Image (cartoon, rainbow, N blue to C red; front, side, top):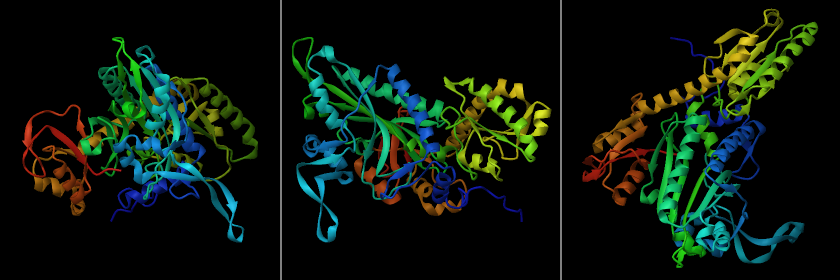
Length: 505
């Protein structure tokens, strides 16, 4: 019997994927649980990753004319009540402030006091509070389009939480726009979906399926919801970004009106769109292996770690001089409009390399006296095995570092795309569909779960039955779905075009 190879993370993905994920978050030093139930502390290594995602996404937004602003964390309860479907969709997740101070009560304990005249909801999303501002900012068609984004935190009181993927408080951006015509608003909705696709595929190396949500999966109060869906390594789907066409629903609720060029008073057409720190969870589950996270170079917390090796005290000065000089040259180079970020780890401990492997840094460089004598460095890449290292001349390494990073980025995307394609199948019959998503099928390697492209009759009844029976939902109606007729995998009635069914986070 072959000896099982040792991994940095236990359990492995195959043994217990859910626990593997938790251990990767811990070992990679990305985040930890906070004293507040369901909330997280994002540590510097994880926050640097988020900052890089923010920087890239923010630049893309601004290229389309969007500007940043900030709106209150607290939303009057009456604002949410203005749009019935919206408040119903978020009611069970709302944290509510009812008092404005604390007083000493029995036994000297602090108790809430000073009841508020109107309860305040801690921001679950900002359509209503931003709509109130828009109603003041817009009076004429000349004020449109209004293109606003805010980077903020939101609170959704989740019962079952998991760091990055689903927490009671998380970080995100939410864009909100107002337009003079439905055509402009719809075009903006599609444009922002394209932006999210670009971020996911070109920067996170995460292949996605673009599509439209079914009516039951739409954002509460939206006319149409577009999304990108990615496949994780346990074959579940992760919604990685959404863009909503809100029609005039929120404009009517918030009285966002304008005088048109025809001198008539009309309601604006609005959109909203968002992506959050769950993208970090997506990076972990798309690229991670049994040794930890693997960071896509274009958003990595750092690109290169230099590890000087100084076994003798007399080696230190020479090795550190070489290391510092190399770091300075690398930091003078740019990789995708961002300076190459270099870490130097000169700790006198064993296992340094494993620390950086678990943290997913793209490139590891060892520098010892022998390497310096040969004017070389010893290079390891995170997209390869931990023993797969290459000696390179110092100048060659400096010259080729951006190429190496691009190769890693490309490798990660191709791996993830191959995995998704391998685990996406067309199923046209009810029996095959149920077998594909039934847990007992895990006994058949490579069979259980994934993305099923199947026909659906369009009935809420069938959609609900599949969800109840299998915990499987319609992730999206692919934008590139062919319109050929087929039989619904639930009821057998005629359906037009295939939809993506999957289990999801």
